[in-house]
Length: 131
Image (cartoon, rainbow, N blue to C red; front, side, top):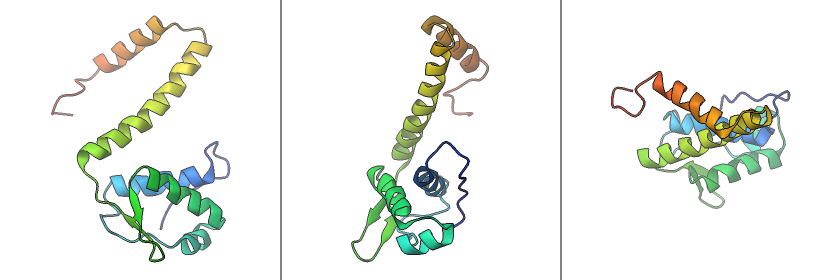
């Protein structure tokens, strides 16, 4: 499984792996009921510890993107577009929260941040069917 990981990233390796698999699922590169590599196989392939892969799979289990069949292994869950949208909303909420915290730390006010959001959102017709 081709997943890019970097020891230089501030994101923990297990989260990078979970993110890589998540993206493949959401882009339909891994379809429903596809079996994922075993923990040991992926560990060897990515040259990381078994615990790291287990933690990545646990993240995806919590997000309901994969399911486990006991000793058989892990499989991609059937997901619908509403579920995908909720996952993306959670992901971007976390990213936006970090940016807002940085802006507040830099001395901007909530009003300033709202103005920035209005400017950014005003540059496109967000929420229309054309986008």
